Image 1 (tube, rainbow, N blue to C red):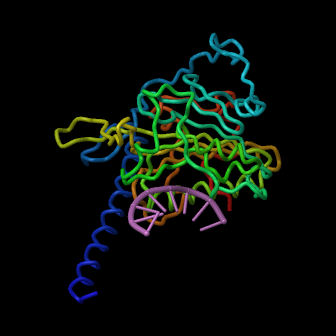
Image 2: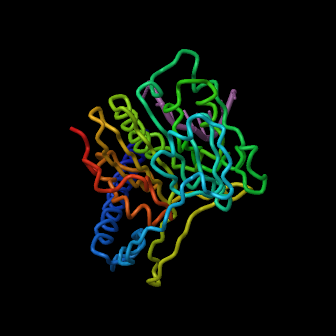
Image 3: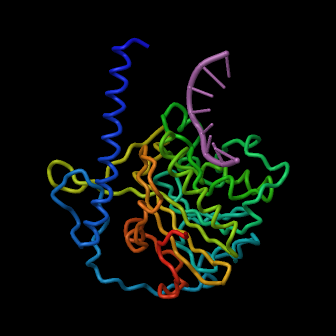
Length: 314
DNA sequence: TTTTCTGT
């Protein structure tokens, strides 16, 4: 490499570093902005969450058995997974070891829900990721389904929502995480293969030392302020089926610890290359995620029963 | 280790 090339590479690297640092601080800014009940600040370009001034009143949640279109879900894990409530009830799909709500317009999930135990995240001989292939979800109408071709050459990874390594107890369970309904376009380097992967590994580490862990994961499409001062939701779509590229992803984790107490962790990460910072930088109050996503998580748990909320275990 | 893509 010539000296000139080296200089250019160094300059670009510094530029990227500065850019990333700025992106994170902007994200943090939108967090505090929201806290102060100001939807938008003077800084244009920040992603914002919906305002918190609307008074919160929870609608009555019908018991699952009274849902009109509810049929007995012939999957043994479903009862366990929905013990604390569905985030929403549209286009539900249940698989051997996770369930999801599908978003036909965006060609990806609204959310996926997993129940983890120490056994489920332990390695089992013969269950290997390398044998698995991403497949279309045949249960979704082809108009609303994403395909491998949509992702090909897009520059985005096929990022699992329910992670493959969370479902190691059978080949079928892991295989089902490769169904494209459980996948969303994620930035590869710096996100899916790095910061987001670190979050998934952290959740598995918690699962290994807890009685039960419930994880809900999904995409967000957050508005940001454009130069005209108005808020717009802007996101890329990829492939012939226009699969939406989320601006952010959330992960909500309910932990039943070894003493049987409940703890809550809730994260939001921007779908961008992220610097190597501690996970607690991505804590987001649950209510902000609920408003932005149009979901309500774990409604059967009164919020005051959590022993810890967004505290990283030491 | 786990997350993937691209080019062979």
